Length: 603
Figure 1 (cartoon, rainbow, N blue to C red):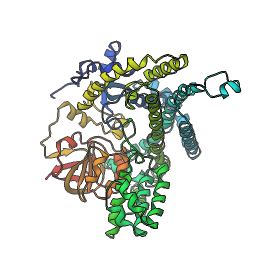
Figure 2 (cartoon, helix red, strand yellow):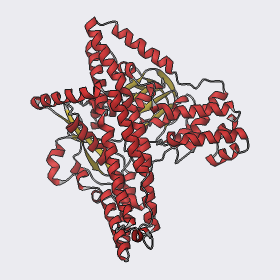
Figure 3 (spheres, rainbow, N blue to C red):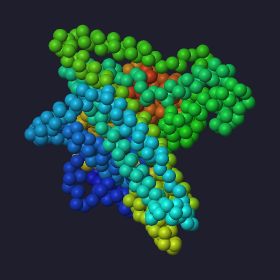
Figure 4 (cartoon, rainbow, N blue to C red):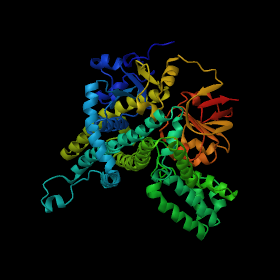
């Protein structure tokens, strides 16, 4: 083996120009000398699926909220027997996580007893609890939408005096900021309320199949369970519906002509059919275009509503196919029939007792599986869209009152520093003196902008610490695609000849075609029919691109990652967790991918 271990945190040099980056983030997200021994003994891998680039100080709120939600539910609420939460650190601006297994048999037994009771309650009452979960989510989103950040006026409104309020109306800015942060953390606890149980139910069925059918492929098990229906697919279905409506109304050529959204809308305004279609488009935007092109964890990521060229490109792609006489419907009935046929074939190999266990595990997995994907619509898309909208409103207010020079300034403060800045702005306004933070933060923000530029120019390091002999954490393997083989490749223990890559076979089928390396959704418009899409990771919102590509290859992601699930649902051959395919392959190269073996071959 070339290397026995990865770098330790304290050995990681900052990129040139990024020295002192640690001071930008809350201390507990950054390695500290007193925790060095423990950190060095663990294995940490980059969560590049959710944070693909270095994170601004304010945006680190996501790393806090996500892993607090994981921890409190896995460790303290449902009490997963063999694993606690995921510890989190930031290194050179990137987010790293560490699975924490439970190895003491007595502790596992104690937790297993609790888990049996608590998980059993959820599984027995899943439909009601899931309906209740949706209500809670929509209520939190409504609260966030209702928050406002008005500029401090010269004088308080008359009601403060005439109605004897006795308090400042403008204090609401501070209250609303605290409420926004609190709701964000609350929503991420909701996120994981049922997710661990969903994965747990699937893992029970997965393990049963592995024991009963030793030769069964991982993706075959997944295909028996996968969602097929649900609101996860709704945004893409709305694009298909709008394309059909446009072609039926005779405005297909307008939709496929290209151009900016303003150009398209101006052309639509020339006819009654175009006006009617545009009205339908506008009505669809809320909530279905509150959908991030990536994962919505960074303030500079956009929703479809922020950039209407994205959904319009998807609609144009579908309209072109319709005009060519193609069928654009997702084969839902076919997938459902194949799912049942596959399950029936394996069930027939079992004795009656085993068949009963198979049925129970399969039915439970299918019942809970929609949550595994649908929760992302509520949290990462709908909630994050509102959260970042409100943060932008707050930023604009601070620029308006002269506290910041630019709307981007806010994101160079972490959430605690922003709380201090708001206190300074409010108190100075209340007293009638200039805010001290105007000068204080101007210099610091300038310094941090340089640090962020340096951090974002650097490549991500895949892992730190001591690698495990075997990666067996189901979350790391199933969601992130961090496998023993992948860790060895990161260490340099395996070599690639540049002609073949091995990844996780995520969706069956063989495809051959030229490569198109995509690093951002803005590049999806460049995709040509028959190409192989190669990317670090694909987002669920890339679904319309799957209508033209022949196959998908990603650097990261596991069997139950969103990329893998969406590819299976769209019947798209896919290989995930190849490690460095997006760096090693070049646009125009011709490759063959095998979604059953996980092999990617340069032709």
